[in-house]
Length: 157
Image (cartoon, one colour):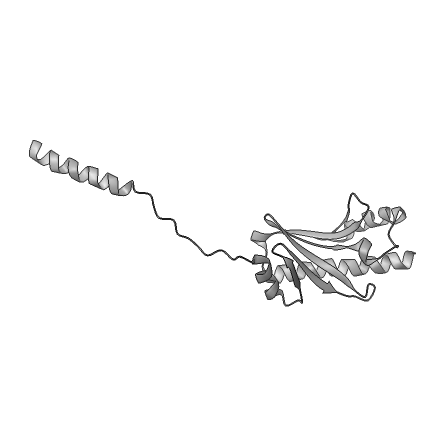
């Protein structure tokens, strides 16, 4: 019995030491510019400002020229325009109530008031749930809402 147990114990210890070895980590190549990569697939003209910010020039019937920004922040893409900058001198405290009421008319896109009384049109999406088709749709929605609100505010003033 003793002759069998010694080789058996040796085999047991050697198998334990092999299974206790740390597993090698598989290194996957990370995309160093995920924002640029996804925007290329959208088919829209864009300019990369830095690794977390891109600008898309846009224009519409009511606002001839404005910019849509795409900001990568942690696990989000924040798509926004600065409505106050797009409509200089047309947005003030008298239009805030109207803009707040308009928030109910849009699904993903929301109107936001910053601490500096600047109005933004904004949509947030999680990076893990977005693809190029969805991102381009949301970019267009932000641009369209900006143009719609621009026409409404211009008509009211």
